[in-house]
Image 1 (cartoon, rainbow, N blue to C red):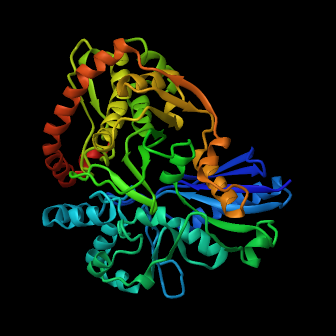
Image 2 (spheres, one colour; image 1 turned 90 degrees about the horizontal axis):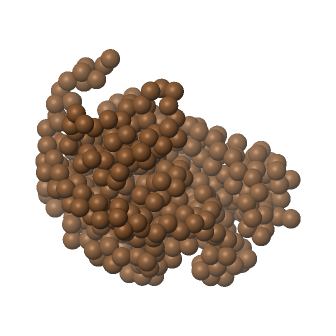
Image 3 (cartoon, one colour; image 1 turned 120 degrees about the vertical axis):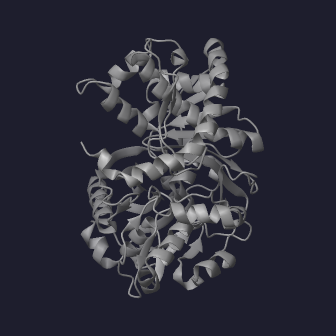
Length: 503
C-alpha cells in the first residue's frame, strides 16, 4: 500500500492527513502555533515555526506509512505575505490575512479609485487582508525594508521552497494576492508598476496539479521519505474547501465556518460585483471561485461563551440555553463584528454590538442572538453572490461552528435553503489529496472527487422560523448600514485612549 499526504496550512495550526492509495483517510495530526500581535492591527506568524510544525506532521505521517509516501499536496491560508532577500533568506515574518495595518492605505485607495481598479482587474475586494495593500503599506511605511526584499511570496510558497529549493505559486493562491490579472491569469503589469515591482520578484505561476519537484536530499532523509516522493503544489484553502465538498458549479454553495468563515461557489467566467462585495478568484480559465469571507464565525461564539457565561459553562451549555428561547431572541440583534469584518461590509474598523436590549432580556436571549448574529452575517455575505448569479439548490456546510444540529437547522431557516452537512471534516486536505491523484494520473477529471465525498444529513428549512427570520433580517441590515458610519469615530476614540482597555 502506498499513501498521499494532504497538508492544510492554517492561521493558528497546520493539519496533515494520511490517505491510502484508495483515498481512505488513515491518520490525522495537527500542530498549533501562535499569532504575533504585539502592535495594534498586527497579525503575523513566524515562518520558521510553521515550517517546524509542517516537518513534525510530515515525519509522523510518514512513520505511520513506513515511508511509502507517493506525494505531498498542499492547502493553505490565503493572503499571507513574506519578504526574502537575494539569497532567499527571510526578511519578514508572514503577514497574515488578519493583519489590518494597511487600513489607511485601503481608505486612500477607496477615495482615489485605485481600489476599484484593483478589484476590476483582479477580483480582490478593497480590504487590508490583500497582499497588494500590504505591499503599498510597507512601501510607504518601511521603504528601506521594501527595497531590500528581492522576492515576495506567501507561506505555502515558503514551505515548498524550503523543501525543494523551488519558488512557484499556483493560480488560486496568486489570485488571493490582488496582483493577478483575471483575464490573462498572469501578474498584472499595471499593478506591479504601481508597486515598483518586477515579475522576477514574484513566484512563477502554475496550475494546482503541478508536480514541483522531489524533495531535497536533506529533507527526504530528515522526514523519513523515499526518493520517489513528489511535491504537488496544491492550492488555496478557499478553492480546496469548495471542491472538497463537491461544489463544482454555481448550482451549489459551500459554507465553512470555523474560527472565521466563508461562503463560496464556482462559476465558469469572471463575475464582478458593481459594489465590490465579494471576491472573484480564478482557478483556471474555465473556473472562478466567487465568495464572501467573514472574520467573525466561531471566534464570536467563543467570545460570548467566555464573556456572557460563567467560566465553568461549556459550549454545549451555551447551545442548550440558546435553544430554550424562540427564534428572533425577543428582538435582540447582535452584530458580530468583534474583529472588524470582511464580507459583507468590508470594514476593518467595524465593531460588535447588541441592539434592542431591554430589562426583559436574559442570558438565553443573548446567547441565541449571538448565534443568530453570526448566521445573519453569513447570510449577508452570500446576498451579493445570489444577487449576481442566483440562489443555489443547496448549501454544503463544514467547520467546527456547525457541528451542532441546532446551528445547522438555524442556517437552513435563515438562508431558507437546504443545508447539507458533510461527513468529512477535512475538505481542504481531501481536495489536496485529490489534486495529487490527478497529478499522478490516478484520476482524470475533477468531477471524480465526488467519489471520495460523503454527505451526512440534510437539514430543510422550517417555515415557521423562516417567517420570523425574514421579518427580522431587514432590521439587522438597516442597523448594519446606519451604524457603519460611526465605526471610524469609535475606532479613533479607542486609538486615542488605549489605556481604557487595561483592566
